Amino acid sequence: MSPVDQEPRTDSTATDEETARRAAARNREGTILALLFGGALLATTLPLPYRMAAGVLAIAALVWVVRYFIAGARTKQKGNWILLGVLAALSCLYMLLSTLGTLAIWPVQAEYESCLREAITQQATVGCTTEYNTGLSSWFEEMTGQPFPG
Image (tube, rainbow, N blue to C red; front, side, top):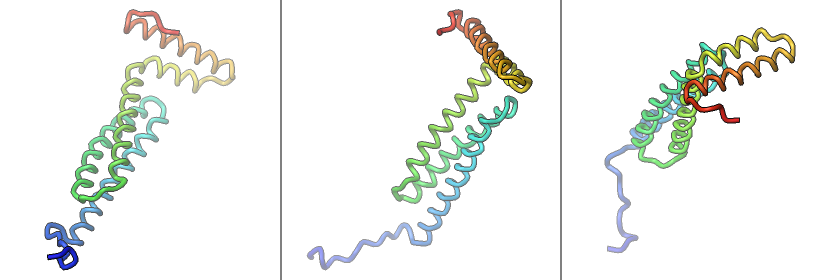
């Protein structure tokens, strides 16, 4: 039998309706992931007590990345969903680590933010920044026992 006479293979495991349903599920998971990621990104701009929501949303987005990869793998199609999932995971990990870093220097950061809110002049803002740098260096020296680099 020549290749011209052969019948095309039919995929009996997935129908068009099932493929569309799986693609819709992947798209739904991607939309939820994008919303969680966007919320985490926006939460990083908030003042201190509310900034911790960025960590919570980043953790939720990391969980949703896994769901997104599972839904994408079930479609059995290549696409940009892989790249989107990897970038979202890396970005969420960065936001989570940034939130944990802010949590570590909470007292110094809280004092700096309250000083900036109360600063009226440019000179007061510079004073706040100087106090912040001094507070960070003393925090670093307390934690590590080493002098602050720089």
